Length: 557
Image 1: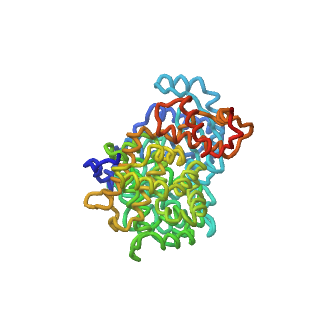
Image 2: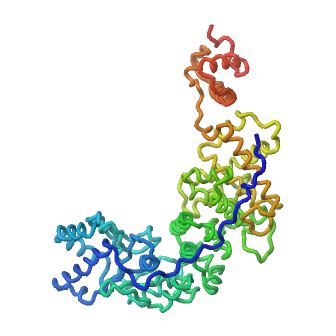
Image 3: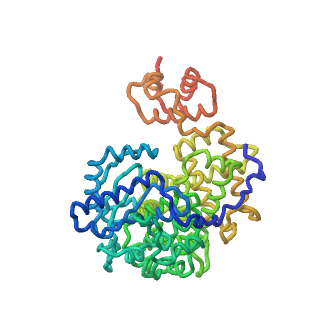
């Protein structure tokens, strides 16, 4: 039942770069909900009338990603608000009181503007804002359906042993230059409703599609090494080119060491999973690879894992990025995601599992550790990105089942005239469990990473690569067998008879190991005898009494 090779198995290349999202607007026209946020100015006026000294010269800015996205005509409901002379907590408390006193008026104004959410809720101050991948005191809440984060303008003071900065009040200029990228350093003045580019480079870089740091890259990255990953994420999301000097320092070993030692894995994980949720994660993976960031990001620079993988992965030149064959995995995955014709492409599109697929691609290189370092590899990998228990279990099962998956795929492909029994494949899928599809993809990607016959350079498509073509044919052939045999949901098949019925059938008052064996073999029989029911199942089990090890005296008369 193995599939014949088809032209539709030859995948089109996934894009190596997306069209950059260059600046669309010179100004920002506020949406109705954003217009309502001008209540911040009215709150400030109220504070001035109440003779709150800090409100006298208070400037209010929208900052960061909201400014960038709105200039690009990208909707954004997440607004960072920066204050010049007041903390977020002080202003947030005043804002909550002011809104409560004027709630009816603002709700009516919201309805007049067609804003559905007319409430302010959840305004509170937190010391940690992991949603922003920051360890900063921030006042957060929801206002007219917009997520707002309110902080004071600040400068960051770092010590040598921690990347958690001490915060001090700063000027707008000090605030913009402490940020990660020029395109994220644009401010929108709520009074004048003008965009202000205090670095002098942000608007030009947006127009040119360039990512660079406001300050010298080494200083920016050593102040907070996570900025390396943030720039990779933002650059790949927007299709921007990282400028040469910034890219050079992304590959610096001291910065890699600082990323590993001084940045919490929670913050690393947040950036990694944001990358995996983007439309083109392979572009970010390319940048991670080019900067030699694989080990710091995905393995925490673990020396034991690093050395073991050096010994087991295909040989590479000393000057090459590492792991040299890793791009094969994520390029192929990207091509499969864009492919809707082959069995593999259809498998991927049929399920909402994009994030898990990219985890599989990220960790394809550790497949070589499954025989003697499995637990250590999974624990280190899961901790590196703070993976959920579900994701950790998926990675563990993918490694544990890799050999059986590969063997069955090969057997199904190599014996087209005498394919395995339906029960052989069905019981295997049942053993692999509900995530068998993801495990199958992992096996494919891992084979590609470790296959000495495929091209040494990254190869996103099988065109001209016979080894990759044959590999895809094997896995597509296996899936053909599964689909034709109606085995996609084999992991959900349950025995027609439960343990109590089997005990009653044989007159057994106490169970034993034979019960599980009987139930497993009954399921296998069901795979090979579709359409048979309970009476046939009982009769078949009676015939297997001796083989199942049930003593004659235990049998019913």
